Length: 351
Image (cartoon, rainbow, N blue to C red):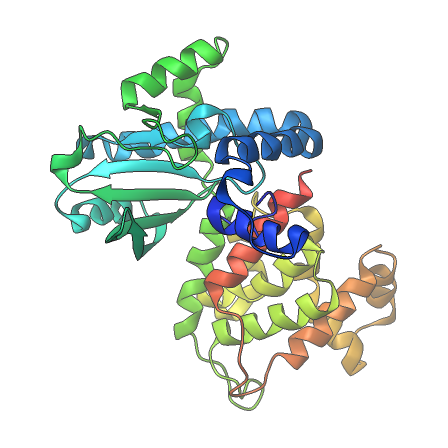
């Protein structure tokens, strides 16, 4: 459960019992959900250290920002972000109450947030219930569960303790933040979130329009720029699956074609400025020169300057992926999965 191979306590306990005991185990002999949660927290403290505490504060601030957006739907923060039992990969869990899902998604659209809507059928207490979840792509993953307005005062039970779940309204979360972090300038922190958007949302916003940018069939028989970029990303993952900077360069190297096809490298770098590292920017800036190296048309001095950079080998590898990502009809990772992979890689690299 710590590594999220399983997300449900019951399934995790049954799988562990079969593996360890090689057979059926009486339910009363299994650990409780609370005991498992405590052991997961021990692992989180061991592996994540101080970064876990910093993430908790930031997750609560992000939660407050989303709750302010959705204030008219009486949002409630629940789960690990409220209780403090977060770990790597934890999401921000919110409940909202409305009889119109579209009213909620309209607010998210107005704030240009990326999300998916999931309707999940769950068997609970002998009955099948359909839950509506909105999965937000933000600095941290956010799961918003939409309930009918009449349930705003309903007492929900915890699957871990069996007791009423802890939840915080917007004023209560504000009070919690002021109490837990007395030196925190809350309004300034919220302003900084608005001024510094999630880079992965920016990447998606730059990449999505590329689906409508067609290329010369002689050089790009595969078709549009987005399809080409995803092919290059997949090839790059095959070569250096844990090099986040290299993979970002592979996915983003042509984003400028949706802005200024005449000088796509410059346009892309201007759009990405402040959101990518110097190394990623260098790989994007010189990926066209790498093609000239392979073609034998780049001058000796210019080639020598490229070779002096410590990422020269990755630049040439990016060029090979760029040339290889021009196959019509090949199956690729979709954009959402590519962004999710990079987001998770970025999160892991911080530890």
